[in-house]
Image 1 (tube, rainbow, N blue to C red):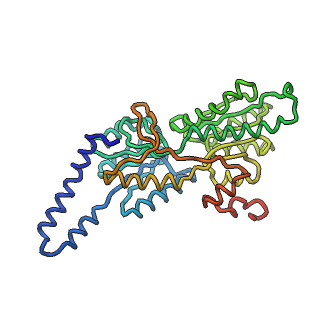
Image 2 (cartoon, helix red, strand yellow):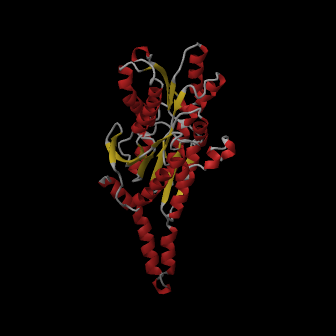
Image 3 (spheres, helix red, strand yellow):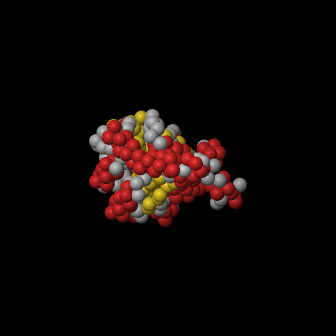
Length: 368
């Protein structure tokens, strides 16, 4: 989905390089081609990577994979980390534009915050990849992420399936609605909205049937764990019962389960989330968390790095879907995620190499 003006700008950016190489070739013909080849080799593709933060475990791992893959492809990468600051991320994106990167990969703090600076990237002929989080800008060239709606649907359905088991020997007329809390992610992150859409796509028929009721719902600004803690504490301290909690990621689940443990209800209240962090996998085998969603981040990071280098070479964008980002339908490379619980922990997490078995089961029989 390359626009003609962007293709022309990319060519104009390449012309000085081509011109220099041609001049060198003419001047050094008598000396052979070795120095010309060296001039071409030294002019490597430069990828810019702008990250909101690396506080969460998965982002640290993905950063390592992105850098390693770009380097393996004989390209260079300039990494900027904004530490959850919109202003700082704006400055860092502008820095990468000024550095004349070939492709810009962005994990935005706020889907709507970078219109002006990304317009500058467009004017400079720089391709933009929205990495895992959608960016609301008309000239984003590719969105690479997982199916976030399906993740919300999957973890919610896993919770419903477990709640159904509790009603097997209860007469239908005696079944009371199960009470759920929903702890959404940061409202500035479009993935939070997609996840919430998937949650309700799964829950709505059970809400309508009176099987479950959502007693409260919160949005965790900046993905803050404290918001999860406060919501759970509010209900337990008031004497309200909770049967299940749907948390938008494992960090929020950690906060929720910490409060459940304080009230000696960890394991009794069913908790689902996403990211398959080691702590969540440990809680699942310890039976204080029901499930999490595993997103193959190696595939996400390595594929994005390869696509970025290909885009820098002017090659065709790879996508298997499209998504509307508020301005246009942009190419969307959608990857699959998997709901993980006690039954498939070894087959999914251990076999994939995402976590080691001895680490997951560390607190169970000495990890054996």
